[in-house]
Image 1 (cartoon, rainbow, N blue to C red):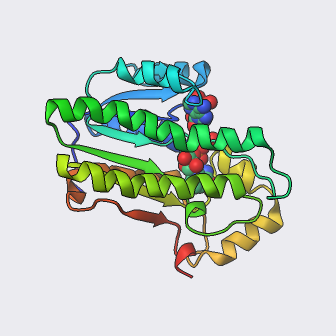
Image 2: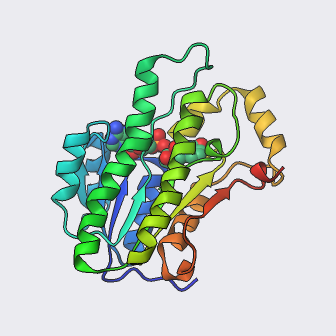
Image 3: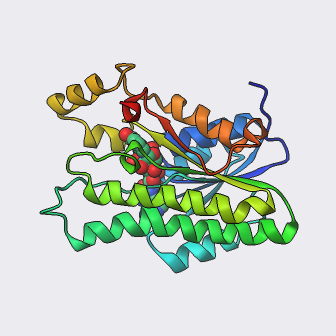
Length: 244
Ligand code: NDP
């Protein structure tokens, strides 16, 4: 597909590892100026060493004020990928308050916070924009031991729909990408148990987990003008898991 982001400025959260890091690399390849925001300095240092033109921002998204300060200091962002997330798996009978708070602070509240700062400048400049929230199949169906994570991703999808409704009139689109298991650090942590892996694999009609590139391809498509009429969509990248 013929996609160029030349002249566009992109912000990717959770850019130090996994899906976020590869999204940064792809956006740079497609011509965007990319701001990579993440929590761990070492991950940002290695990213900067690999791609010197990337602007890196170290920030803990769980901290509302710190996040607000970091994002408000950036020049106007045209393309936003709200990708960072926290995941710790516990059954509903055992999940504690701290775990619930981390899921909601990082996975949910930070999306509202970052989006608010980004749209402020976009609207003031009268520029179009595209936002992709990286959600999960866990926002759409129930998964064992995923109560806090499922709840947070369900909330992400609702943020996407409301953003699409409220920002559409400003020509700012917002969509969700909802992957199945991807074998990043997060995916490996959650799906290491062979019996659990096999159960999930058998439920996916394509009989494989998603590659990072499957997700990055979808993010890029939704950020681009190739999806100009797509707004408020919750798009599974799950080999058919949520269709069955
Ligand atoms: P990783 O754990 O590999 O990476 C998560 C990234 O988020 C890291 O770069 C991490 O920062 C960053 N991050 C976490 N907490 C904070 C914080 N408080 N402040 C700033 N940055 C933070 O996860 P994935 O790449 O797998 O996940 C990316 C997205 O995809 C997430 O939204 C996840 O929920 C979603 N997803 C993942 C699936 C999977 O199986 N992997 C399946 C479905 C959805 P740092 O490295 O700097 O510490």
